[in-house]
Amino acid sequence: MKISKEKIQYIFIYIALTILVLVISFLAFFFVSDHMKWQGYKNDENKRVFYERIIDLKAKLKTEKSYENYLDLGNAYYTLEEYYLAEKAYREAIGIVHRDSLAYGNLGDAYREQGKYEKAENSYLEVLDFKPKETKIYIDLHDLYKIDWEGKKYDSVSILLKGIEIMPNETDLINKLAVYYRDSGNIKKAIEYFEKSLEINSENELVINELNRLKK
Image (cartoon, rainbow, N blue to C red; front, side):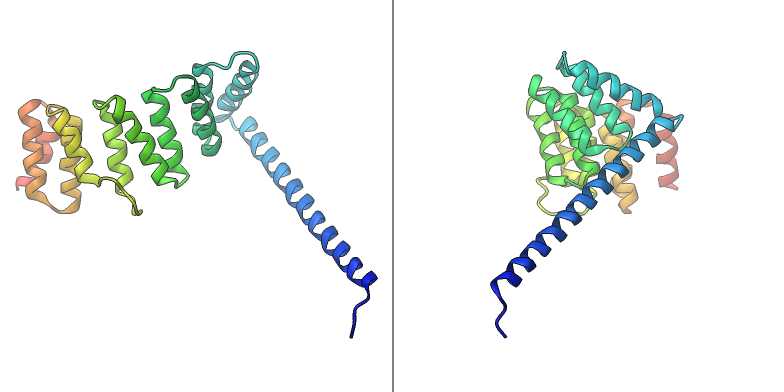
């Protein structure tokens, strides 16, 4: 049976109107949900201070697009677990101060929380390119590499060893590696690195107690 041209036009119009209604409904639902979420932040005693900080910073950024304001905005968004908005703010901060370890590190954290692991890795490694003695970044990468994902440039052990090679007396990295070996069941290696840590700081009670426990 042949369908008339008028009927075909009617069907297309009906489909177009249906799609339009669905899009409008989705946008309305999105904006209502987003509005309710931000109202929730405003009414939450623990989150209100960050909500108000965001409002204040967004107002300031209309006239003063500074690194500090964007960084603070990103931190406020991050605290509210608005990681995508935090990402955008940190990127703006980096656009003003291009080689800043804090903004790049925070951007890596925002990527990680969104599951954008490769981008997180690149942000952390960017810091090490211009600030290779940034202890926190090695630890952040170590934690990132413990997550199962493909395409890693290093692994949990090798990134800590890289940091220890550059900073051989950095006990935070040595202890982190010792804990990793302990939790992985490699007690021999754990003892080796805890002992190495004590050679540098012999008064660390936590390390002393853990070493004694492992040797029993």
